[in-house]
Length: 360
Image (cartoon, rainbow, N blue to C red; front, side, top):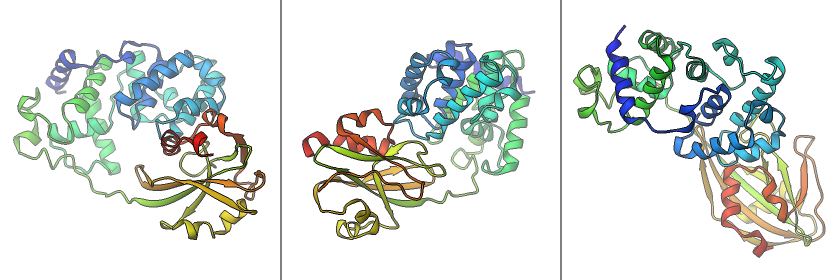
């Protein structure tokens, strides 16, 4: 069906593709690494992480045998840390269930943690030339515009409709080239805003261009609800330059990463209100000196907006490691060792901007 479509996008790809290291690979492990890194990440940011991971962990066995904290630390700054945890868990699964050999079938690839239909199709086609069509947000946009599909792309029926169309369009003789082409074309040419439709190789066939509906297609039915959260971080230190950090628990953002003492409030609060909370008094018992208050940091996630401030405080007496009903374990560490912990990017920004050695 519609061979003109595959011919047009692969021809465009031949002349316009970006030279990216994973495009020269047939190693399924490295292709998998690139696909997981590029989930929710732009190529310009993900490239350095791909190079770091392939250097540090050249095989799936190296990744599987690495400590989770080390993997998370290498991932630091990339965000959506569940990807790193899934990557590590899947590497262990490959070592145990597949005897260290990356799975070769679409079903087995999809059985890996963190791998869905799109990622499994990408790996299967790029590494093994299996005819499984990729469908991601860029492909949704491209196909809906070209073929005039007005089904809302955020509905369950859309997933089936677009997958069936993509499966019909794929060049079964060269699925890797077809998939690379449709992904690149959707990303680099058929952009969400102001695509260059006049000079598009698909303009003579494109429904949205011919009916002046480029801005209206693709159709979405839902609006994402955004939750605001207010994080007040206590960077507590004693005269020995010891500080407390804790590992974030499961069931929330940044699972497994470290942070300073967190007091989360329902709204922005003044330092006077904060310092009178039970949580604050639990950690600061004998008196303290406020050394530094950061500016407010705003961190935007897909469904959450975070507003954070950091309070650098020197306490009287020695720090105690505490636990909250077994939910959080506080670790005492030294100022010079902070770089060895995997922090969320939000905390990383604070540490980059604030010279704690000068303040404490």
